Length: 427
Image (cartoon, rainbow, N blue to C red; front, side, top):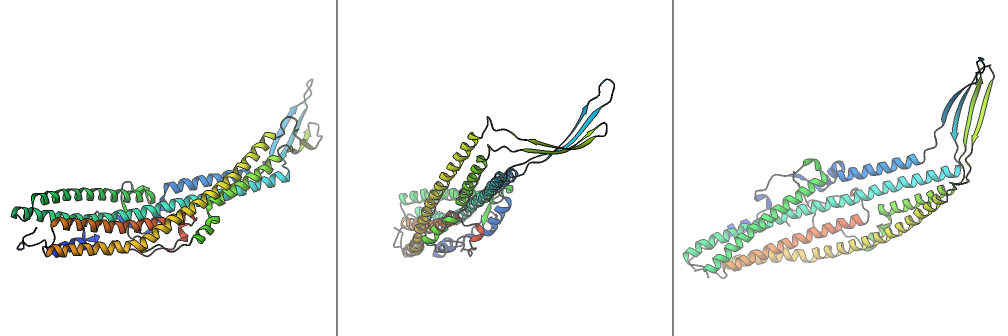
């Protein structure tokens, strides 16, 4: 126990370390972006998004090519008919055009249009998934920075208490056990701080890789974060948005394309004739127009295998759509449950954690200044304060990540979400 005449650790220094804002501590200078700026940078620089766009463009190009009509062909022929020294020849100019039956042309056009819509919807689905990854990385980077600032402040207090303990040990005010306990606490706090700093740098690099991979190993940090409690979304509204999910739209368009493919396959046995129109010129001046018809006969290949393949693809597409709808429904419900649970915990528990942590630390500090508690009791209070602040911070991050995950599950594009006001620098 502290001697009555011994001067305690100055209260102003203790409180100044604990309640100082993160800006009061030296931090490595990093590039800062808001969430909207992060999403804009992601849209412009993301390699994953560029890959998805390229794949979608390739699918659209392939679909457009599949509905292209046959090119005409031009042919020229010259037959040498010379005999016994008498010159004779014949020349033929001809244009050939393969003609497709109207039903097959229409079906190919429908299949291509549905395939293009499916590719566009698939790209939207990928974009929404990627946008959630950016939002999640942004919140995690904010959480890591705020957690590091809290750990840094409490570590500074523990270091101050440990230094004071060495002085008091020499004066005989505390026991060897208390001094050793504080030395171990100081080492542990410094290790925790180092781990928190590494997590912060890793989180900022993860954000940088997502929104601007050209920066290499540069770190990008958030300039703001989630403010308060996420907006209210009802279960009914979340489930109602299920029909608008782009991955469900893509699966539905793929089914329509597969059904149109069945219509194309059913006409496979119908021969596609080639019509020729030309002019034949004889050496003696005789000549005239020529007409030709090339009609394949479906004697051996009647397209039965093609029809079976198309029907199987259509059936698989129907099952795929049903599975996608069920998985999407499960995804929305699960995301809503996480959102509702995390939002409720943030609303009910976080204020108490912040208030109780502050009150506990204040009472422990006051008791220590009045010689009513020991350094170890103060150390426990500092640990409890840190745990409470980190707990409140974790609740905030989890609630907002769950909110963004619900936006992803309901198919909300980044531009559908209104920009949030900036959050305080510390939770």
